Image 1: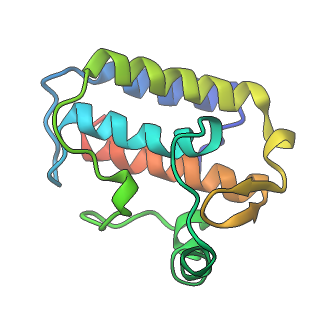
Image 2 (image 1 turned 120 degrees about the horizontal axis):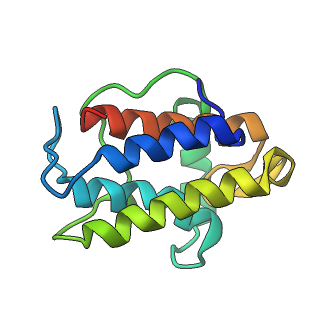
Image 3 (image 1 turned 135 degrees about the vertical axis):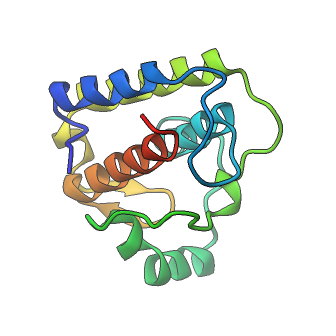
Length: 150
């Protein structure tokens, strides 16, 4: 698995982003390329931007019990996996804006580094190790970039 805290690996993710065009079609799934970029940005918004509500105690417990191990493990996501409601993007998005935002988030995460994420609180899963953060970020990006053939 690639490491979102290493510059070379982040450069590879950014190179893959830069292969996308507004007309790139998915190999599976229902999202358009602009929706996919916005969808990938949600993971970073939950870390850096205070725009998503925190799940209540009951929902957080359910997420920890049912979803956490799948999200933070090294196992790849299967195709056509259902997603949480806050990750569902409806309508058209500005391709260039979403692309630029994603590149910025990837760079910011790499620059902050592994130490910043060790024991950092996740909105949905509680405290995560830097390895769990890496797995979550890296496999999510890889899954969706593969979905769009880049």
